[in-house]
Length: 138
Image (cartoon, rainbow, N blue to C red; front, side, top):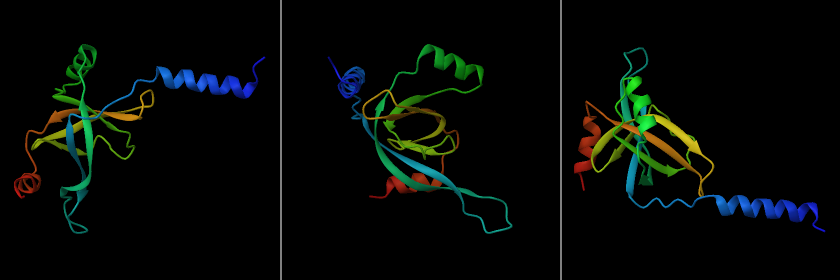
């Protein structure tokens, strides 16, 4: 006869056994927050400020996701998975290999181990000069 505690432990084990393990070994991306650097009362001037660097793994942009993005007039260029960070938003900028991307969608996944955030990225048409200068300095 199994006790309630044993049933809970067994259920947790079964859940963890089915949870896929994610390796984030495709590279390191840099996430920037856009902050207003204008003086009070002047027109807002958004400049990127370093938030954090994260290991990432490339993911496939599925047919359904790509089709839905095209319906919304968005062309997705990359999709990456990073460690779960609920402070990353669709108003942030990601830099991978000196290419600047705008985050179009963030999805937080709890069904992986460790928990991850899935970022849908679109290349920026106009790059931030301050980020270009940072990437060329040693």
